[in-house]
Image 1 (cartoon, one colour):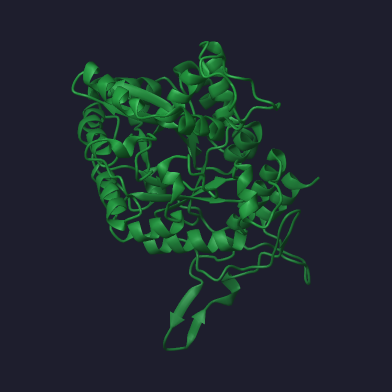
Image 2 (spheres, one colour; image 1 turned 120 degrees about the vertical axis):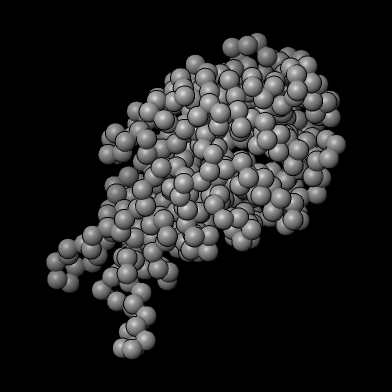
Length: 458
């Protein structure tokens, strides 16, 4: 068991056709996922398993050779709003890009979801790595990596500043006096920064959580700094225990300079569990899934995850090095692993097709619980983002077989203890900041916006 009763956090990464590219072909798996009842069933299984979080990713590009769930999909904030009506406890996370959105819209969307769900909303902050996405947003080309993260830093601070425009108790709604609002508890933002000018305030009372939970997954130096400064939950990309421990310590070590304690962030590596009654049965399941993968669509997945084109290279030759400098999450993890283990391009695309670059654990429920426990206890994770190969069967197997094993070991909750997503992660509700003391006639600028201007200047 973890130190002082420490317990795991569990999220589920929902791609309706399964996280494995061919998962939809498995017997009994959902093949069509653009149906609300399918997503509702996945949400019910997650809540039955007492999961912290259900997470919906997003993409702004359609490629006919891509993962089936990427070809057509629900807009994620719309979907989690609908799922809030059929769940009562589980957190609901969705991706929205800072590169192709506006802070005022994002503040309203996630504030609304937080109110509708009773405090269960989470925003996954991404900058969108696919260059083709820019073509769908009136742009000729995507911003470069560092500029995207400079924009993201300011974006997040403006959103948080908008959530902070309202103090507690601003809505009075006194029928006797006719006074609806205490205007002294609502103030403008008056943000003027490098990328955004936003007057505010947002037209919405303070969220049940104070701030919805913020998720981040960037693994580049810029992404790690954004996470260390702003994130509550981080999805990490790992394959092996030693590098995972190093990455975990690196992120936690970055937090002190922002005045944050290490426990203020929960690190959840992505993992695809393949569960069988025996080791042989589990390997047979994975082999069947892998047998449906073709070089064409798997190579597309490799290119999308490592960030550069590998077409034209021999499948049984070495993985070509990236044509750019710098460390980016999937690029660094996958390429360095491929080089270290002398993997061919065929080896890499098989791995990528299995879990899109994430970690695959294959075996019995007890073996999988043993592995997760080791990573949790040895300082590589605060929990895990589960990527079932297919729905509902592979996910139900994890909930019905692995979760009880973790519960028996005292590593995972037997029931929810709070009503909000922050409660699940052991995070406090974000209090409203004190009203700024400005000189007469001065412009009010929130603390987040001052910080954003300092971080994104130049």
